[in-house]
Image (tube, rainbow, N blue to C red):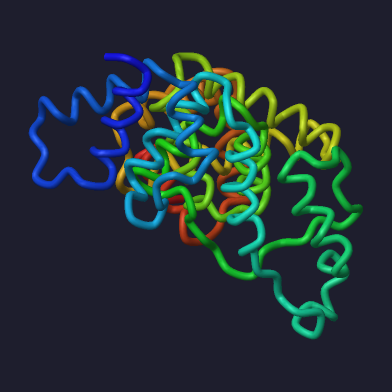
Amino acid sequence: MTKDEIKKYLIWFLTEAKDWSLKEYRLYEKCYKENPDITEDLIRNNEISWENKKYQWEDMTNSLFRCGRCADIAVEIAEKVVNRMLFPPKERRADEPELNWDDADEKQLRQWLLCRCDELPGTIPLTATWTMPFAGEPEEAQFAAMSYVTDFTTRHCAYALFRGIDIEFKYPFRALIINREEGYADQVIQDIRNLYATAFRLSEERIEELIMLGFAATFVGAGKKKQETAFYTKYIDKWMAEDQERFLGIIRNKASAHFRGKILKKLTGSSK
């Protein structure tokens, strides 16, 4: 097929094709994956409405991200998520010194997540309610693809783990475990450790606590896939072998009441 024929086929598939066959879909997939210049041109020139073909559009942009293209589009996706973050108003946190941040701090956190600055505010704002913008397919596939072109994905996981709501961490991090190459998720954890030491200004002890607590809560949670279980088991087995007393002590003293008994029961056979 010529370039013009490829472009026309992509436009046809995305705008006119109905009840397409598997053969037609495979040709569409081959066309956009093997011709990133044409694919990017279609997206950049807005020749096809995103709203009408949202999932196919995501497939095409994800393919471009994996080629190292269209970082600005990935940041636009991230910005929509970051702009939806909600924080409790000042009057609801006036009596909590650790929650004493202002509007400028919230703005700086958003800019940090989008990698537009490297400094976090002195008091890190905590969201008011938990959200799951990257839970399930195709959102997880999109999150993993974005990681090829922006560090937002690592910073998002770091903030979710710091925030302490395990389900906000579970899905985006699962995307990296499953959809990126072997070893990538391990590198992200090391990058998160570095961020905690520099941007978050946390002690090594606190960093270990956050990772242990987050991993343990995710490990006992429902709805895990095989790759997730293997990933968390690897770390938990290591902690249990190296210093079981310390690891279980962190669970007993620091884990939320909701998860404490579940984690201990899973690891030791007793909820105490």
